[in-house]
Structures are given as structure tokens and as C-alpha cells.
Image (cartoon, rainbow, N blue to C red; front, side, top):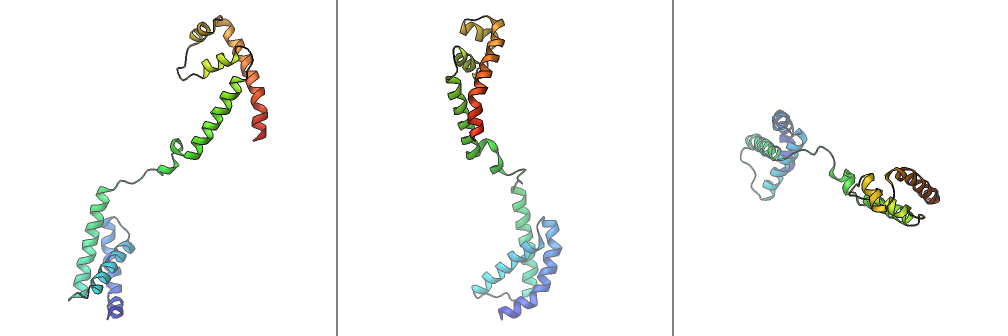
Length: 164
């Protein structure tokens, strides 16, 4: 009986699902699948519909309404949340490793360079005047000192960059 019922209702279900899908904002195949599932659950409970074509039409409309209600409560994703680089564990680990390498290289710099570079890398973003006051040097010599320190830092980091 089940095979005959499925065979007989197939074309009607395809037509009904195609007619209702656009207004429901869903695919006809999704409606068909939901209705077939309802029918099989009903047949499994040994409660076949008395009027299969009428039941099928009502079931398609009920599934279309359910789909419309669900669509109203859902918000589409603009982009994949996993693609957010700020929360990617691998990228976070790589950035932390780069910062660690930089901080280690800054500590190995000669003279006043470690203190100067720490001040320049500070999240407080101090002004040149504040840095010069903290280091006890003139504001005018801060630029040339920074250039020398960056040159030293570049030489320290070059072998590490090449090793990667």
C-alpha cells in the first residue's frame, strides 16, 4: 500500500510544493521532503490518511506556513563567523609568537634602545616629549636614536625572519 500511495501522490506533491515554495521562501524539494516525512510518520503510526490527495494539499500548506514562520525568526549570516580573524586560534597564536620574538629582540638591543623601543611600543602611545622626559634625553635626539635602534633591531630580526 505504501509504495502505491507514494507513486500516486508523487506528481501531486511535486506540483503542490512547487506552487507553495516561492511564497514560503523555501525550495520545493525542502517542502516535498518535509511532507514525505510527515506521511511516512503517519503511515508508521498505522494511521493512513482517509483522503490522501486532500491530506497532501493540507500538509504542503502547513509545511509552507511553518517555513515562513521559521524564516521570520531567522537572520541570515552576512559572513562566516569562523572567518573572523580576531578569534581564529591559529592566527592569535602566530601573532602572540611574533610579539614574543619582537619583545625578546628588543631586550637584546644595546644601550638605551630597549627602554626607547618599549616606550615606542607601549599601548599608552606616549608622545615624543613624554618619551624624552622618561629617558632623560632631548626630544631632538629621539629621532636619530630611534633610527639607530630600529637598525639594530632589524639586524637582530633578519636571521630569525630568514630562518622561517
